[in-house]
Image 1 (cartoon, one colour):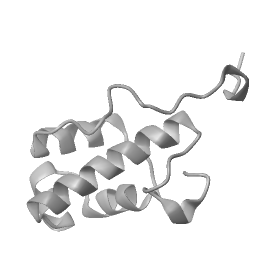
Image 2: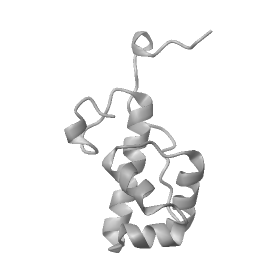
Image 3: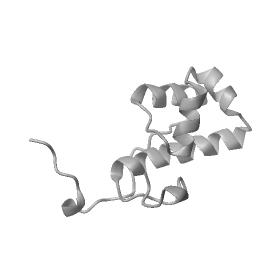
Amino acid sequence: MTDDPEAWPREASTDIGAETVREISRRLADVLADRGWSLRQAASGSGVNRQTIADLLAGRSWPDVATVARLENFLDVPLYPHRVETRIAHGERPSRPR
């Protein structure tokens, strides 16, 4: 997900999608650490599978909207960034299928 997968989630990505997921993962990890909550506690409270949370935190998968919504609702904090700071130059953006 990042240019260097070993640097997840510390290093930013040049891909806007990966950067958004990285920010969600980073925020989730921070909240869990600040509250001293385990993955099991987060899973139980949010209704999101523990392995799904672990995969998100490790950068192995991207969450769907329902997963982010459930986690945000349980934690009572926004995880999805309103605006990702990484900007991709127009020439670097993937083309849309026609």
